[in-house]
Length: 88
Image 1: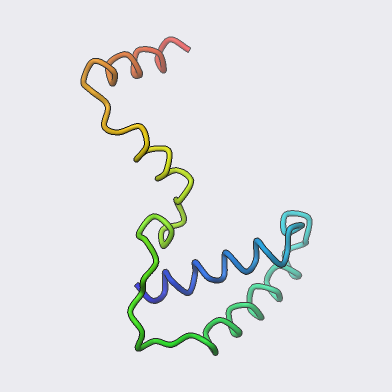
Image 2: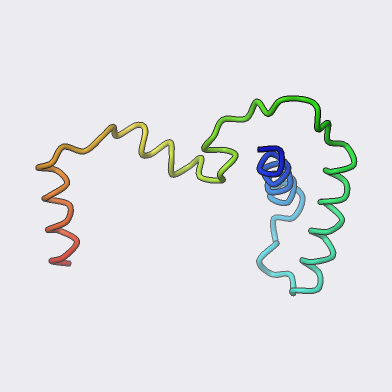
């Protein structure tokens, strides 16, 4: 799980420090990502347990929040959802 925690920290740092990430070319992205990875790994304590929630470690915190707030679908709701998907 430590590699997922490192990845989470890198994602967070890239979002904060490089808002124009999509506009950068591939060479710039590689150089920046390598630099950020080296910084995070250098300052990371591998003996400390990971305290981040699972959805955040997997990078699905927005999706998970939507899913957990809705709850589990009933069979009738699921049937209606599938029917709507096939009809549209």
